[in-house]
Amino acid sequence: MDTNLKILLLNPPFLPRFSRPQRSPAVIKSGTLYYPIWLSYATGVLEEGGYEVKLIDAPAEGYEIDTVKDIVRDFKPSMIVVDTSTPSIFSDIRVAEALKEIHSESFFVLVGTHVSATPEESLNLSESINAIARREYDYTLLELANIIKSEGPRPSQKKLKSVLGISFRSNSKIIHNQDRPLIKNLDEIPFVSMVYKKHLKVENYFYSITRYPEITIVTGRGCPHHCKYCVYPQTMFGHVFRHRSPENVVEEFRYIKENFPQVKEIFIEDDTMTVNRKYCQDVCKLLIKEGIEMTWTANSRADIDFETLKLMKEAGCRLLCIGVESGNQRILDNINKRLKLHQVQEFMKSARKAKILIHACFMVGNPGETKDTMKETLNFAKRLKPDTAQFFPLMVYPGTEAYNWAKGYGYLTTTDYSQWITEEGLHNCIISTPVLSNKELVDFCDYARRSFYLRASYIFSKISQMIVHPSESKRIIKATRTFFKYLLKGSNANSSSQMFDHSHTQAKR
Figure 1 (cartoon, rainbow, N blue to C red):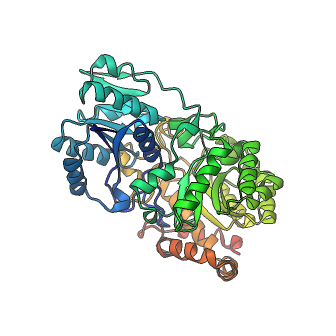
Figure 2 (cartoon, one colour):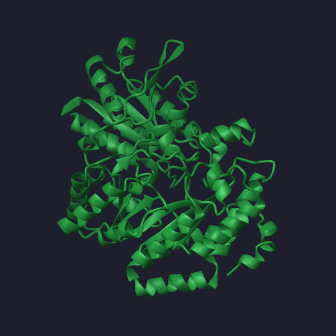
Figure 3 (cartoon, rainbow, N blue to C red):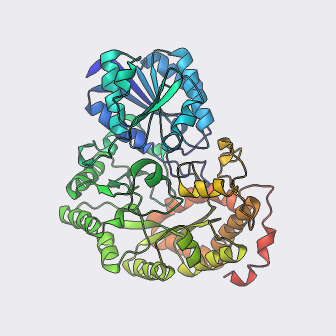
């Protein structure tokens, strides 16, 4: 290990329990807090490269800026990597500036979806930032570390120009190097769970649809689909699904089982693990063959056949998170979902038959949305009868087609990124169309949650589930504590949802 070069990777302080690493960053109503998964993968790569690395997750630890300053003073890193998000970007920059003031010898790098989409704009926010590592940054950071090791924290412009995937300031000009090719062999990256064990506390993290405590990993990166709103494929990992070998995935399952006795579940955070049906089946078959009995949850499209679902269940899959988005076919076509409503219905039948629970995601405010199509979505959600459901207005982020659509048509209510969340950190709807205002979209989602969750039939089903499956009780109770407050008062305590109450009366059941 080269003790002369130390690297700090930081999920910076912001709001309490601010879940920066997730696709739509905010303080989440259910209390969900994601692992800093991409910083963690990069940490593993840097440690394998021989560097002394410290990974700090300030929101998870409850650290304020003064605590982080103390860590920097003590650790004295030569490179500081700061994660970013759209709603927190101005705060993220201020954190970097504050750290630069006390340790100017460090080379400061920003990473994440937001700066990948807006590298020039982000660099222009502060001269304290030396570079941005765009998109998939694991080996970009390793190459920067190698250069800093040989040249110090002020490397030559010539050296920086050789690093694929970075944007940096050259005197008064900003240089954007070519993108770094995406990683082909994901097996070469150390297990992220090993990084968690060394640097993080698994008890700090919670995902409402998983059993607590859980560990989050990925089996692959990238997604071949082109949904217009989806952030990761458009800003980070591209539209080709690259996956780890089944053997590598199963070996990490084994490592987690042996090294985290307190962990109840693994969450597979791929955009959609099931996009390659054969690969998904191969992973499941190997889990079964190796006798690794551990439950897991994954993201999936709603078009998986029964035989695959049955195999997934046998391999330990407890729940799938699916993006239904809308109950109107025209809306699905408008957002390039490449999914038919009848496929969703068949999928739900197959999932119930396979005894896999489903968390369904619904989103309103997409191109073509009206009050009538939103009603169709709520009615469709009730007919599908997923185990849980979420209803949110469309959140648009720089770098996505959805953002370009909203900005191009003048539907953005603000260009101030800090307004992407409310004062308390909840998602804030920042689009208004000629048909639906942002308030109407938020009010509908508040109403839809109450209409879905406060049905007598749904409440009875949850009570029954807790009795029949006691292992689900802890998850349900932990999520409900926080979520119920927002369920009753809505996303904004001063917001009214009355506009939908009467028109939806016939749909309540």
